Image 1 (cartoon, one colour):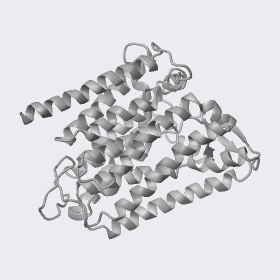
Image 2: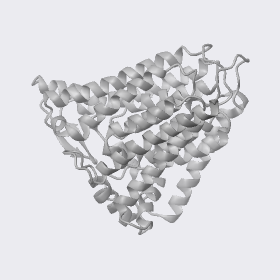
Image 3: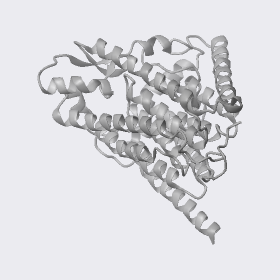
Image 4: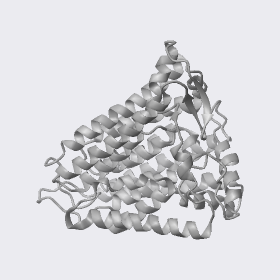
Length: 412
């Protein structure tokens, strides 16, 4: 009977995924037309244009919108090598990675499907952006790395290294790696060696593999970031008289105090890193709870302190939150639900009412403020709960294990 119940729960999850993704794909491909939701140009124009350049053996060195590590080039090229139109093949590739991520979450959750359901329900709420960017592919790799970190730290490090060479942030999932038994050293070493190997291959086989570093460093305050909120409020009150313009591939605020705000955001990222270092030094409990909760906290901190919070960044957070919910003893469950609430707000601010953001209207200011302040609240709550977990987390043997009364399990 228990197996039948478990099987029915699993089937329900997959049925929910199938229905929600079928709707998402029809909107993404334009079969079902919803006003103001066509975001396919990034794939049809930008990504395919990059692919045409990449197939010649060089990276888009003259395009400031190319801001990704070398392995992302392979991901952009892949739909060009496969049969069918570039756009449809790209969407199919993202959908396959979406399904792979759900499979990992279902297997990790065992008796609980909460994490899987969070993934099923929240990703479509971001809208077609979820399938018109490659962030979902990167998130699937990060989910796999997090779920294997306790049991196979070296393999998790390899996955994190590959993810890092796709979009940098997946290295953060190693934040909760246990220092005991040298698990953290093994995972970080594997991550570094994997990233170095990818860089070496890219350097000897292509041209301009590292041009993204200069483009990324020159970015300013993007209009969807937390640092943009003072400029929205200042504009509404008539106290700030800057402008919004396309700058390094995204719409950014340009004008008085923008540079100083950018420096504040960079400093806040440094402080976030300092918090994680201090937490690791004082923490004494290293379990699957630690791995999942620390990964979400690290990704969340570095997202909210970034000068850019594009809509697809929320996919990263949802993936990390779903992993947390596969661990029954997680202490930051409320953070996961805050992030789920941020998904529909993200869809509202982009693409539905993005024009209101550009105009800095009251509606646009309200939407982006609600989304970003929700992310900030989630980050603060995650930090507080992670800090308090020392001695409270139930020892478990792996990311999908149930709580145990045995002495604290140490990752090897």
